[in-house]
Length: 159
Ligand code: ADP
Figure 1 (spheres, rainbow, N blue to C red):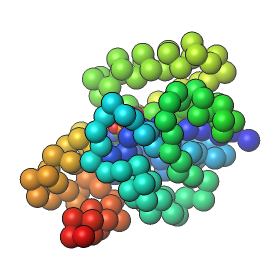
Figure 2 (cartoon, rainbow, N blue to C red; figure 1 turned 60 degrees about the horizontal axis):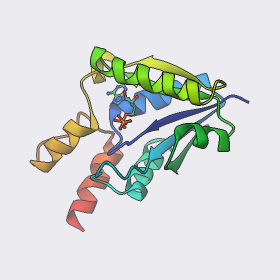
Figure 3 (spheres, rainbow, N blue to C red; figure 1 turned 90 degrees about the vertical axis):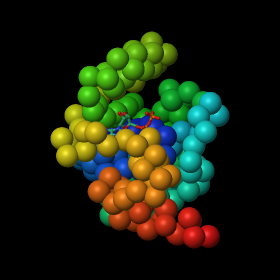
């Protein structure tokens, strides 16, 4: 059984992420979306909220699981018997960082392979950072996030 991990912050999950999850789930038997609990970044949403949003938008994908992780990706992979890292590539600007990350993970664990899925052009400019910025200024984010996420964000704003 081939187990893949798609790691990221998903703060919040966007249509670009969902596209990578949907396509990634077709490549592996099981895809674990690893939600990074990173102390050095101050997220807009808690890990629990990010997981809840991811669970809502992937409910129709039976071989996708959502799990939090902290620490090294290679340790998380080992714990879950996963051997494939899936990442998305939007533009050349992503490439340098992604290459460095993949090479670092490879040097930490030679059994791990990283594969890159090229973004759907429709979402090539979509990022969580921009979604947060637009949302902060009360702009319309409906074309960047799945409807479940839009609903969720509206709900927690009211509460
Ligand atoms: P990180 O904090 O590690 O950058 P993100 O949640 O921003 O995590 O992104 C996780 C992964 O998803 C990265 O590989 C990133 O390149 C990819 N990604 C983000 N947005 C998109 C998009 N619009 N299309 C394709 N891939 C994307």
